[in-house]
Length: 344
Image (spheres, rainbow, N blue to C red):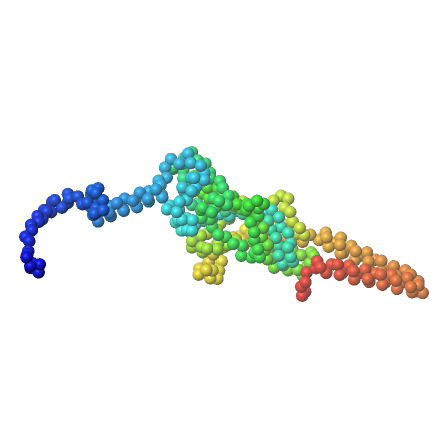
């Protein structure tokens, strides 16, 4: 046989039907075990599975509020202020501007400078936040009480003192902050603060002068159409008895409510609700009488002794006059540090 000749060979092969393809098992070329090839899920099944997973995750992240009396206060406050139901960056919803009631307790007033006063006060303001109402799903729970941690979880109004130089919240181990939330959603926020305020004094009658100074509380973020400050009635201002003052005595005080126009603050402008605590103080003159007036009177009286000396007693008269003058200079130089530096 010629090796270059080609001899075709006839072969036959059966083609499987479509129904047999879906049930055919395929052997891996390198293994002898047979594995069934899984069919791919349809698009509709994938969408349904994803939707169900999202719904389940949503239910788990924002559970229903029901029968929460057995939770601890920390667990309960976290549940009540979850991001899915509470936005601490937004003020509570109200029909019209939100009302915030303010009450202050004056503990101490002292003169920091001739144009500044330092006051120690206890500030407390209250408002209604319906989002924190829990009497329906935790009826046996009383008021929630807390400090700085509870404050960080809820919305609180931001108030400023417009005539302050510096303000600080007092405290030893931490800031003295107190939060109370009632079952009806009434929030009380209070703290102790020390503030140095500017008081433009008229010193023409010093040291027998009387001054009128004031504390101006104002909303920082929301104008009068969104938030209104009101004094807590019937006692908006409490004064400690006895009130500790240095150099001054408190004669009288009044409270005022107003809406004052303010310049642009962070893009907002308009009339901002303002509460004013105006107090009338008189300077205590006892220090100046003992330290300045009485020594001056005694020096003047001593200088008059020269009129009873003989005219030829020159040395005693010169010595007495010189000593009196030097004493006056020393007394005046010591008082210069306490006297106000004014042009009148």
